[in-house]
Image (cartoon, rainbow, N blue to C red; front, top):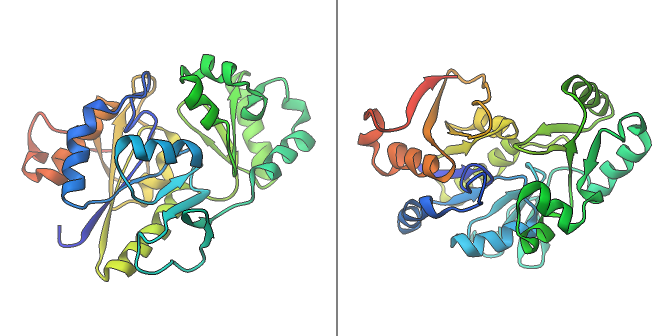
Length: 285
């Protein structure tokens, strides 16, 4: 590429397997990207606590976008200069895009009484209950519950009522996103806006154009995929590819981290494979 590539990736169901949360099938590709100094930037619904631990496990030290575009954490010193509009929190420069979680909890409690029996929020889950719903290990479930900007909801009602609920909360200023398992309520932020902001920071720091490559598997990745220069949809074992407005997207043949590795290899590490019959397919969305 004539510009510098930036990889923005969803985590659950994309870089991590939907069922066992493993990234083993992507390890070789991750190492190849690290050797080439190509940033792997998580853009996820996961929390700060989850991502800080996961970054260490995966072996990456890039900035990451948390809670569906609500906030960006940049390790202090990662760039030569602290980006504008960021504040220092602990070991990070932080860019916030929306109000805190408590605002959304109060909105639900005060304005969504008629729907209260049709969903369960993260704030009501115990560690054990979240483990049962997600198959997370207790230590990982404990980190998942520590949220700062959004509230994931497990919807129990039918789809018609869910659409009514989404419309109602949207009319009150909430931004609703359906992920792989949970319906997320948060502010008017999304993965695409956060990605664009951070990509511009990289471009300013590099003093060169950048190319954004985004990978995701579910509806809450759509804003990121729509905004990316190269959009890669990862096959899910639980649902169809979400429909995007983009004319062309790359769609993996494998699920989760296998598909992630397949597509990064085909489109970035060995571009000559992109037209191979065994590689990811470029299709109309």
